[in-house]
Image 1 (spheres, rainbow, N blue to C red):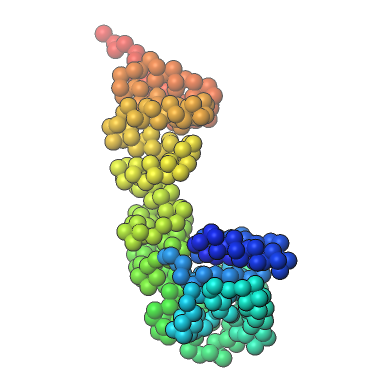
Image 2: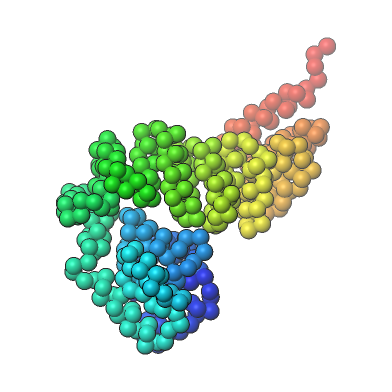
Length: 385
C-alpha cells in the first residue's frame, strides 16, 4: 500500500521517498499541497499513511486531516505531521487536532522508522475513536444506513458535546431522503459549535435540496469565512451550485477565492464557465484567456473565447480564434457555425452561406445551423418588385 508525502518542497519529498525506499516502501505518492493531496486520497482508496508537512501554504495539515475526518469519500488513515522546529505550542496544536504522530524536522531514517511505526499503532489502537468514526463512514459509503446510524448514535451518546456524530447522522438522514430530520440535526450541531466548518457545508447542501438558494449561498459563505484559505470550500460550493445551474451564485462564491488569492487548478475554469453561462462576456473572456494559456488547444475554451470576442465586437480576434479551432479540428461544427455568423454580420454573406452549407451537410441534425442557413438564403433572395 502506498505512502503519501505532502510537502511543498520537492527536495524534502525526494529525501523522504529515498528513506521510504530503504524501508521497502516501493509505492510512494507525492503532493505539493494539501488540495492536491486530498485529490490523490480521493482517487487512491488503499493508501497506508500520510506524512504531511505542518506549514503548507493556504490549506494546512490540520485542514487536510479535517477533510479526511469529515468527507465520506476520503478514508481517515494514519496521519503523521512533520514539524519544523517542534515547539511545545506546535506539538500541542497538532495533538489537539487529532494527529496520530509528530515527526520533527530534520530527521534521520531511524527517526522516520520509529515515528511511522508509532503512527500506525496509534491509529489502529482498538480504543481510538477515529477507528469507530471510520467504521460509520464505511457503512455510509456502502449504503448500510442502519448500521451507520447505529455507530453514529453510539458515538453521540459517548460524546454528547461533539458535533461530528450529529453531522454523520444528518448525512445519513439526507441520503435517506429525510431532509427535515437532517436539518434538525444540523441545527443541533450548530448550537453545539457555531464555528465548526463542515456544519455549514452540510447545511448548504440541505438548503440546496430545499431550493433555498440564498440560504445555501450564505451557509457556504460562512464556511469560507471560517476557513478562508481552504480551496476545497470554494470548489465544493461551486460544484453544488453548478449542479443546480446557479451560475450567478457560483461566480459570487468563486470571486471571493479570487479576492483572497486562493489558487486551485479548476478556479479559472469555474469562473470562466459561470460568467459565460450568465453571458457576462467581458468577465468570462478574462478567465477563459487565462485558462487557454494552460490549455492552448482546448477547443471548448477557444469556442467560448470566440463567442466572447464576437459579443464584445472584437471581430478580427474572433475570426482568428475560429480559424485556430478549424485548424485543430477542420469539421468542428461550433467553430464553423460561429464563423459563418460572424462573416454574415461583416457583410461576407456568400462565404457565410458556404460555411453553413458545409456544416449542415456534415451535421444534418444541427437544427440551429439548418435554420440559420435557410434564414440567410432567404435574406439573399431579390425582393419582389
